[in-house]
Image (cartoon, rainbow, N blue to C red):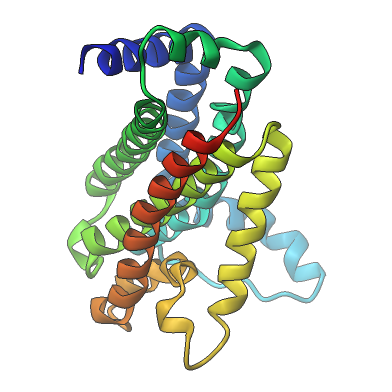
Length: 256
């Protein structure tokens, strides 16, 4: 376990040294603040724009904002944070291939499956850290301004979206074990997510599409039940584990 711990430590130090962790923290903190801030400022912005909107033929009425408005912003903004995360860490494997450091690590006794596990642990822990930070900031400010208790199944909805992000990151790990450039990794990951999204439009099969978890924010209004997403969550969880397993298999077969 010592070589794995040493390699994982090296990965965290490198992510910090290159500024990726700092960018990640700033990004999620920014989104965490923006969610309640946008909700709080919405009536004020509409009041400022009301005159010009009325001249254009739009009627402006009083807008009531509450905790649901803030959490709606959370679920609108978190996809952008996930995209930024994937773009930021899409070179996690490929830079090792280009620089030749992977071969150096392997010659020092670290087995290939541990390389994959270390990379996966790094990405998933940073995603969990960033996502949790964004959630905690949003939760705190929303509780300060409004009442979080009106948001139904809040923790279930937030957990579903975390799982979706985990699934996407495992896709990134899978394609990183196959491809040698981060552009290809990003495009292939985006392609599978797009296919899963199209899959969610098939009436008899949509309940099993991981992309269904994108709609987990609908739970907040109480119009949906958690059970509507359990099959999609199960498919996402099982396929995420399988993708890491396939990544290990690919790495064992790969010429470095």
